[in-house]
Length: 316
Length: 224
Image (cartoon, rainbow over all chains, first blue to last red; front, side, top):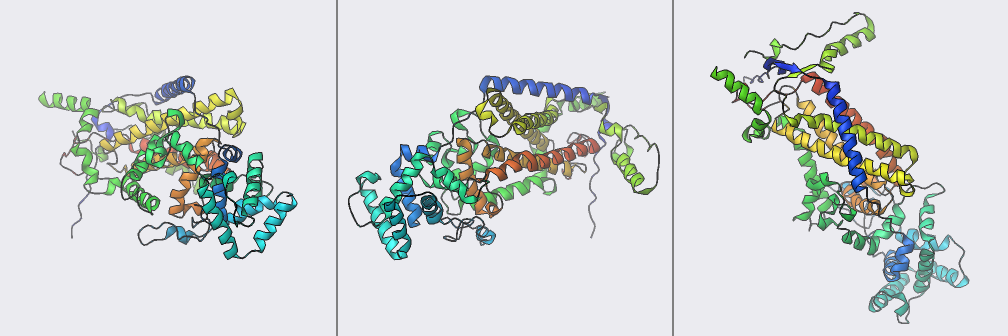
């Protein structure tokens, strides 16, 4: 079996050469880029929308805060049902037959009842009523707890999410616990209590961010700033600043089916981008694809002077 | 024209000034053979390099250096400085716009190199390092957004985690861990990009600028 010998490419200097000052080109380019950067920065500045605090969320939208806290308590929140790496409540997304998320395991365990409700309540001195409510909750069976949270969830829904308008009922200690959590949040102490769960030194904002993201207000603000996934938000920036435009090929997949409708959409997008990336990296070795530049005559524009000289030389 | 690679008209490399034995001498000879000074810092270039499109390579490099320079100032002053200082905010703006320029220049450079089929003539690794540099830069930029300590950071962190978690990467790379993202952004990823970019540039200097398509053997396949 014979093996085709690769064609030798000509030596670049066999086409002739001309003087070139590499260092001068570099310095001119550096100065040009620095000047352009300064002009753009001076003209357009950069965006800095303040972060949403839990205190502001709880103050501006106590209903959404209470609904979210209740969902953390009854296991109905996004975090509570997320799966790996936070818990085992779900299998996580899969790519074809591969449950990659599950294989990676639960590496950042979050028990939403403890993390978002009980520990913050127990981390500060409480009045006797709240202390009794916490004790009642902890002494109750899972079934009893479920009955209380289920009843309160229904009542809160009927009240339009406003805890102050919930009709009297058999909710056990739930209303008092959530009201106290709301107080702590509005006072601005809940963020610190969530952060301090990781110890004295802390730089991990997983708990406060997951809690915020379980609510509605963070996503609503993102929607207002056209940052939502369905708005090509991955490549957008607040206030119409240019964002990560280079992520357009990534966020594109989220705009079409089956990616935007599948429960495994994220994994599908990553899988697709993995293939696209591999093709791009290995392009020099893929027959057919590597010959596409010859079919599209952009190269004739790039090297037009060269081809003109070649033609003139041939005519002579 | 007869200038195949074996018949190069490129200036002869300087001989190793002091041939020496031992591992050090062997390493020096190898470096001189692979990258003679005339090739590393040439004062001539092939005559076909005569388009503005070639400028995007050096523009990408200088924009990268501007990104590193402005980022270094932000790192020295601390992550929160730009929120409380007008000067800091301006430096942050410089950093943002240099990143936008860097990614734009690099994207144009990559697209241009695609249409030149610039992987020909043993230049596949040059292409590969270029693509990796673009990908690593995009990832570095993502971590930059995560450590801004503002609404952007909150939203991007809580959204990006879902993609990473879906493929198990979230177990090791937590977008909501500010400390982890800060180290990735100011230390690990810039080092990766710098090394890949340096390798890319050395390969460009070693292999030279890819010759025009169809200059010889127009029917040949555009292979590495």
